[in-house]
Amino acid sequence: MPRLRLGTPFWVRSPAFRTPRVRYPALRRDVSADVAIVGGGVTGVTIAWRFAQAGLRVALLEAAHIGRGSTAASTALLMQEPDEDYASLARRYGEKRTRRIWQLSRLATRDFITAIRDLDIACHLAERDSIYYTVTPDAAARLQREHRRRRNAGIRGRWLDAAALLDETGIHGEAAIRTHGNAQIDPYKACLGFAHVAAKRDAMIFERSRVERIKVSRDDVTAFTGRGSVRADNLIVATGYATRYFKPLLGRFKILNTYVVVTRPLTASERRRLGLGAVMLWDTERPYHYSRWTHDHRLMLGGADRAHVGGRVRARALREGTKEVREYFTSLYPMLADIEHEYAWEGLFARTSDGLPYIGPHRRYPRQLFALGYGGDGMTFGFLASRLLLDWYRGTRTSDHALFAFGRL
Image 1 (cartoon, rainbow, N blue to C red):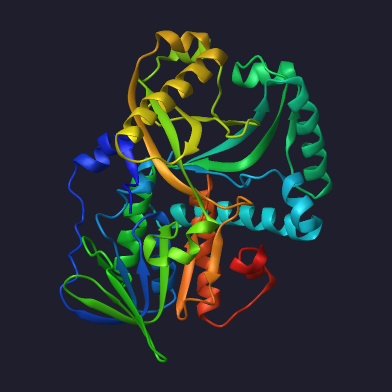
Image 2 (cartoon, rainbow, N blue to C red):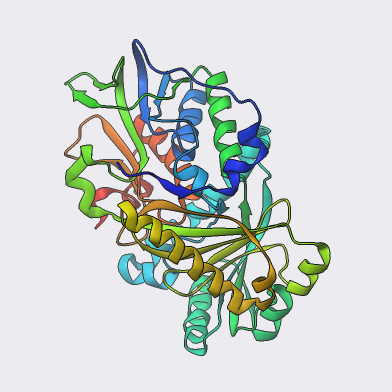
């Protein structure tokens, strides 16, 4: 399994990493549970919280440390808009199913925000509108059609012409769609917060406990680590993408790296000159670029996604990718050429052919459920997975499960 990130994310240097935190033990005995969860990122810990809250016995196994893999590399945009445009999904799945996919994504975003507030998880939660923009005339025409399709489906969004785009973002572009109801967080603090709440509800959380083998019987499934095991009714794989243990599934995912740079804090004067308000940005290019403010007034800039490479080539790709991100945003905001960048990193993520995750069972793997392939919407779809998988475990089957099933393609 390749390293889930390269470089030093901003979150790693934040006070959350420097201050004492709860450290969970390694698994050194045999335990039993209703459900075992593999993976201690945001998806894994929110699943653990959801199941524990429902009164189920939970054991979570993390190979390294909670929240320090792909979660720490995330820019943590809680987006209700899937990676694929509404029009693109509608061509594949039709209006009715596409409308429901967008509804579920919107509900998951809202419920995630509500859960963070209700559980009093300190993670710099800030509700933010997203602005989906373009700087090219051809893309503006497509974007207007996209806006029309969304509006006809009951999906709210405000159209911005070139003047409004400039006024709200400082970008000299063509047009944009502004969408209300999104948010941003510190992903590491959020991950630790949900793990803490899950543990308070008696979830067993184990760090430094890599799963080496899985054994399935008629009555249960057992995950073995180097020094212990968890026997459960079901096992949930929340590792982001299919590891080599699930080799037959690997072809369903495209493994990508995304690149992020973060500036030093900008002064109030510099922020006024830049012209970017308190919004999150993403553009119509594919792969797309994205941007957000941090709680301490830094600009976090990302994009330039490319196929994953390993070894020394990966380090070179990091330099090239972060350079491309800087150059792209400097073309939009020339003053960024004089603003120092203090952090640069890349993260690894998996994307499916339709940009939607796989949530649920696979016929080749009895007693195992999956939450994989979230693309750029890992926070939103990971939280949605926690609800859909609990429903599945309880025996509830709805058309919502079919939308994200392995068999949908």
